Every structure is written in C-alpha cells, then in structure tokens.
Length: 580
Image (tube, rainbow, N blue to C red; front, top):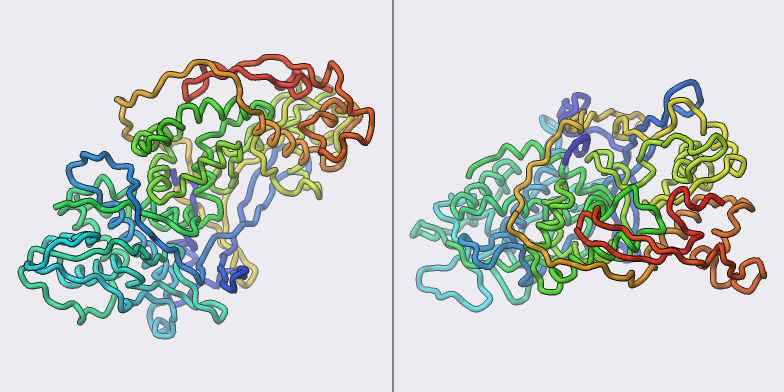
C-alpha cells in the first residue's frame, strides 16, 4: 500500500541527515472556532501531464499534512469488536491501540528533535504525567468495570510505560513548540471511559513502585515492550489492526475502542515503515479517501452511481444490522485488499460509520496525493485519455481533464465528484484550450512524478517515497474463504438521488463558464436545473427527448455479486448514447 508515500517530514532523507540542524519546514497555522489551533506542514507534488511539442508539460499541486494540534482525541470504550467471540487469546485491541498511539507520538517527537549541543535547547519532548494505572495485588478481587492486564515478567521500566499509556485521563504527553504555541502529537489521546479502568499484574511476586522511573522510553524501546506483550498473550494477529486503528486518529474528533476481554512473536521489522504510515495518517483526507475508494469504479458514469451503489449496500446492510463486524471487514477488505487493514482499524475506532454513510449517498472522498502514493484510482481524472470518438467530438471526461490541466480559472481544482460525465461534446462547443490540445499526439494525462517538502526559506527538498515502482508491489492478505453472503435477486432501483447529485456536481464543474446551445436537453433536465428556475421559461418544459425513460441494468460484473434494474432518463445516458 505504501507505494510512493513520502517519509513523514522527509525522515532519513540525505538532505536532512545532519541531526544538529532541524530542517526549517514551511508551516502554517489554522485557528479553530473554539479558540484552539492546528499546525500544518506544506509540500508540493509534481505531475507529468503530457508529452510532445505542446506547452502542457507538468503541473504542481500544493497540499498540507497535519503536524500538530492543541487538542487531543478523547477515547471511550464500547462493546464493538471485529474479533470472533470465541477467539482463544481474548481481545487486546484497545490495549494495543493505546500502545501504538504512544509509539507513533514518540516517533513524531524524535523526528523533530535535534542532537548534540542543540538538544538541550529543544522544547520537543515526551514526558510522563501524574495519571497512571495501579496494581492488582494478590488479595484484591476483580471488580466490575476493572480490566486486569497481565504483563508477565516485564521489567519495571516497561511496567511504568504500561501504567502511563493505559491510565484514565492522560498518562503521557508528546509535544513540540512552534511559533510560540505548544502543539500535541496527532495521535495523542486521553481516556475518558467512566465505567472501566485497567489494573496491572505481572509474574513477579513483588509489585514494587515504579515512581523512580522518570523518562519515557523511545519509540523503538516502546515497540519492544509492545512485542513482548504480544508474545506473552499470543496477540500478534491483532497488532496490525491496532496500528491501522491508531492511524485513523488524526481524522477523528472522538473515538471508541472495544472493551478488552480476559486474556491470560518479537518482530520489529515494520518499525522502519512507521514514517510512511505517519504521512498517510496525517494527510487531510488520505485515510478517508482510501476507504471510500472501495466503493469507486472509475468507469461508472455519474448517471449510474445509484445503480452502482445500491446493490453494494444490499450486501452490506444485513451485516451492519446484525453487527457482524468481522465479516463486514472481510467483505470490504476483499473488494479493496490494499485498504483491508485500514477497514479493520476504521471499524474498531468507529470511523467506518461515517465513511459508510457518505459512500451510501455516493459521496466518495478524493485525495489525489494518497491515490498517487498508493497506486489507486480515486477519480476519473486519473485515467488515460481515450482516442477521440470522432474527428469533431471529444469525450466529456477528457474535456474535463484538459480544462483542469490547462489551468482555467474556474476549473483550477480537481472536481470533488469522482464520477465521470457521460457522453461527448462537439469540439466546436468546447473551450479554446480544449480545442488546442484535443489532438495532441500523445494525449494529456495526470501522472504522478514526485513529492518535495516545502522549506521556510522557499526551497524544496525532493522525497522519492517508499518505492519508485508501484506496479511491482504485491498485496498479501489472508481472507476467510468460508464467508458466504446472502444471495440477492435483481431489485428495482429505490432512489436515483446519488446519480442526480453526482450528475449535477460534475456538470456544474464542467460547465462553469456556461452551456452550449446543443446541450439544452441536459441543462434543462430536472437533475441539473434548480427549483427556482422551473417557471422562468417555457424552454424547460418536458419533451419526449428529455424525460422519456429507458431501462438499463448493471449486471453480473458487479463486484458485490448483485444486479439492479434501473430507470435512466434518456437525456442522462451512458457514454455515446447522448451526444447533444
């Protein structure tokens, strides 16, 4: 999944290897309405857009990654879990998620700290706070709402760490000082569960005090404590899901974690990948767009979105209704293996609830950078151009791409609607920039070329990313082949609202400068015109060519195995069927 993902803050880049000097990134602050603020670091991506002799060569997109915030994520607990009820080794997810939250935060601080004589001047730090978990001694009984955590033969430093990360309230803090303000790690949390608390036990008969342990461990040492815990509880299989859950934290305003159940392999090879996962986690819509991408097919036109989405949720809704989160995660992961781990994490933290609701309505989030980094297609704009259907016509999807690449003022941003417009446009009705480049020999496309970090002095430092060739990557995921989903018969389309909104959105972007006369049938259609304009002109009256309906079916090729019969207005037809 990491593909071309750049390392967070350019960690390990040759240009930043002098640890006595911190790179001066180009930062900016956004103030929130509640008086708090969020800190971002800026970067630029470079895109190749064409080949040949024309003037369209490359394009630069600026974006921002979350660096810190003055707020932290409140964590509650609930009964939701994606683990099987009869799992032998219990459910350790919440415990492991708290551990990953610390490890990511410690790594975040370490990336920004200086070394040598400048280190003492740094205000970037990890500290223990007063809140901590207590012991369960041999004489005390298990209390209602108390979760006992057996640490085996953990050393006193490890015990102090677990006491901090599992504390009610806030047991540790990761912070940096920038521009006169103190910002917390994007993965910082506080436990606000009123009904449950942890207690520690270990193999040693001496439950000695750990108050003498003053310094929190480094991220690497903490990862060792975590892997020791996983070995002791045989919980290695839950560790990846826990990391995926922690990666969703920067995208949430609150989270709830599954209650651990009673529970009575040291591999740190993934530690070097943390900076890349941190970049995805701090991308503004990176995680959300990767999850939404599960429901997207770039070849589905805007007027068929409802027919595409409805059968998917006819499969998913029974799983959601009976809270079968394990099967839900497996089904979603099978459709988009790259995001399988993220789906597990999103379901665990509750993020999946809003993602599924947005996707049900056809609102598919787009993030061009996360798409390029992970080699996924999140919008039709990323597709290669098609040969012209005729010497004097162009596909509207290619018309959109040329308008964007040419940098027209009203089309300077990629459309928020990922679904392509149907049909073709006469070249004589297009903008001059479209006519200029429609016949370029190599065509024009949007191809990711690289990333650079923006520095305060105005310079940029290039980051090659995790892997230069995403086509050679393989996705290895274990899926339960015993899962059998309910069979579904063809059903009538319940609503075309998603298709209507997608069509209005993409045509609104495409026709920002106005509509050609030849597209009157589309412009006057009820999906496009506003309610206020219904009585402005007789030109908007129904006619046989606009509101007559024809039946179309998206059948057996649907990845979720369902087909749906639908009604499509003939003025909102599939590519090539409507050329006016």
